Image (cartoon, rainbow over all chains, first blue to last red; front, side):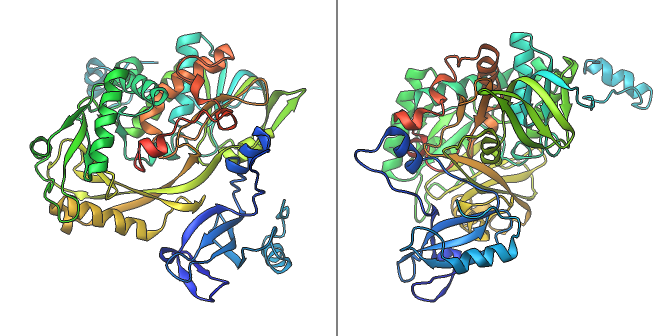
Amino acid sequence: MLTLECPCCGVMADETELSPGYEAHLKRFGPGASPEEFEAYMFARKNPKGVHFERWRHAYGCGKWFLAARCTATLEVFGTYPAQVSEPPPEIIATIKARRPDWEGFK
Amino acid sequence: MKRYSVFAIAREAMRNHMGWDRAWASPEPKPAYDVVIVGAGGHGLATAYYLGRNFGITNVAILEKGWLGGGNTGRNTTIIRSNYLQDPSAAIYEKSRSLYETLSQDLNYNVMFSPRGVMMLAQTHHEVRGYLRTQHANALQGVATEFISPQRVKELCPILNIDGPRYPVLGALWQARGGTGRHDAVAWGYARACSDMGMHIIQNCEVKGVRSEGGKVTGVDTTKGFIGTKKLGMVVAGHSGQLAEMAGFRLPIEAVALQALVSEPIKPCMDVVVMANTVHGYMSQSDKGEMVIGGGTDGFNNYTQRGSFHHIEETLRALVETFPIISRLKMLRQWGGIVDMTGDRSPLISKTPLGNCFINFGWGTGGFKAIPGSGWAMAELMAKGEPGPLAEAFSMWRFKEGRFIDESVAAGVAH
């Protein structure tokens, strides 16, 4: 079972305690956006095989959203971090680079 | 190709079965083809077959990373039905179901299509209203379905508990001409027919890159070298995102794991397919006697072909409530497949930003039933360069244009 540490309340939470929220760090578009921008925000996804950044909610715990870095090919978890950032923090990037030297980096 | 028949069996019985040919050839790739299809699963092979049969295009290679039919074609619960709500879905799935009816004869290969009937239980008043609506839509679409009473449900499937403690059965949407098929045989039958037309099925050949020039694909780089092509068709599940990235575009798809399991074999106890979408589980009995059970998808991106155990617990809890007699059955095997979920839970059969590159992706949790119809529509798209009536609504640009084929609401979770 997937286990993630909630960075908001510090609990190591099982998957059954969490709600998945799919890809993180999407740039939001709303009224005034072009159809292409809105489609990219709403539907187009990286869907990588490997390092992935995603949103989770500690639904049956503190209720807060947070973000996780995870490998979709092995289910390895690189770390979790608060959701109030527009890109992964340097320590998460460093952890991933240490374990996946050929990773192309966050883009 | 030697035809399979009762006479062939009798002839081979007389000579220790030494005269059977290999069902398909395993040639080395040529430098170039008229059409290259990536993915030798059911959909890819069906695309190739109908390119040859309907359009006479036989200079075709079908590239497969692993072995033929080794992905979701060999991992599904083999349900075939066409009782969808939206018109484009009903059209392509009904085409597919009708092709399944004569597929064994067309391919000279027994795909064991068994139109035993598919029953989708209504266990809430909301579901009753939903299925009544689907039944009326199906009547307009020319798909034969009927809404049946709980008593009729019990007659058709006596092992069902219609007075369940949480969700009593209030009726069901019944498609008498739906059923099941032998999933591997569908891939093998198409492969044999494609090979017989002179097409090349190249297994253990992974695509590593897509080469293009001036907005047109020139060929693909593979683990067996460069293979040139005039037209490229990408027909895969799971790795559609990686292929699209090689070709330089992004898709409205996320890959998640869907699980299934089978029990130990028992005596025949149900001769229909039952889907219970409210409690979420579906079940049928295979010819070997195993109960074939479909579960749920995980809610996160996953390429590992295994899912989370708590989904199995949820599925079995739901099914024990629905079919009390299975409570002491042992489960034999459990596995996962990687399914491509699109934003509206409908597939993409589409042109792409590259002129001679076409995609057939995103069948989500319900691809097996669609194999013949999907191949039919994709072959038409690839041969003519423009989608025919079956495929045109499934363009990848429908998300930008807001023309969704919203089966996520219409079909619920189970496909």
